[in-house]
Picture 1 (cartoon, rainbow, N blue to C red):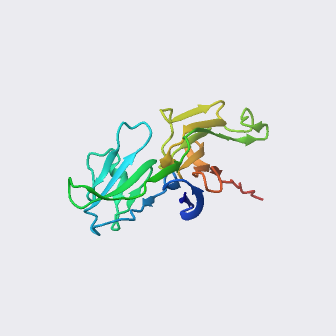
Picture 2 (tube, rainbow, N blue to C red):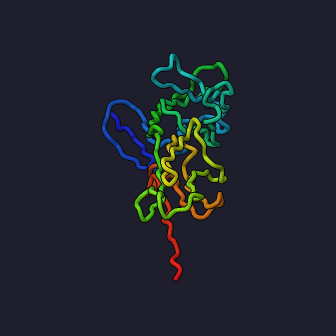
Picture 3 (cartoon, one colour):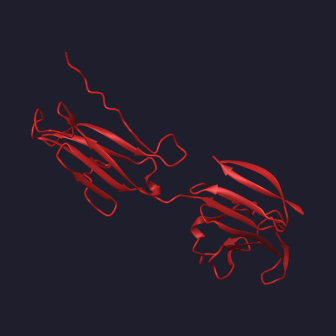
Amino acid sequence: QTDRMCIILFNNHFISFLSGVSGDIRSLFTRVGDNVSLSCTNVVNQDCSSTVWNYHRTGLERVIEEVGHGKIKTNSQRADRLKVRSDCSLHVTEDAGKYTCKQFLRVGGPENVNDIPVHLSVLTSEYYSVTLRCFLYTSEGPGICSRGVPEHVSLLWVDEAGNNLKNDSRHQVTQTPDCDITLTLTLQKEDNNRKWTCQLNINEKKEISIDFSFMAPGNDCMICKDIVHLPCAI
């Protein structure tokens, strides 16, 4: 019986602990979007010319050689997400699976050293749709503009560049009535810290606005919005 070293990457810090199990195995846990390096502990040639990294996961018919004698395989589907560092460790951005570092003194020759496999697990979540509602609160109540509001007042949703958002594959805008407008959007990874703005126009010119921004899990809030303060002239 040997000890298994488990390494957890949490908020960009490694947390290690030992647990008694049978067999040699290394497990590494990270969050999607984080960067992690898998170490190769038995490097023969310091220029990595002897280093081969293999990859496998459930569902693959065979083991895939991702790194051959220190070089990323250009025909790999993961080539743009992998990098070999100067110490021959493998830099990975998102692909869960089993990674094994092997050492060969020459191309086609016998294996010299077989490192302990590293099982990389990636904590992830599915993207989801969110609905943002923006309405004008009048003396008659939320979104009611039948009296006391000029006809030339309008609400619209705009992106960070100030473009009016229309219905498309990612955005759905619903407005009923003119003083109540909703935006339903499908969040994606690149939406982290992105801003959407509900804008109030008078005579088709911007008067005031309120911003909504998305923050990925781990921040203080998921959908954050500004608070609008209206001046009271005396």
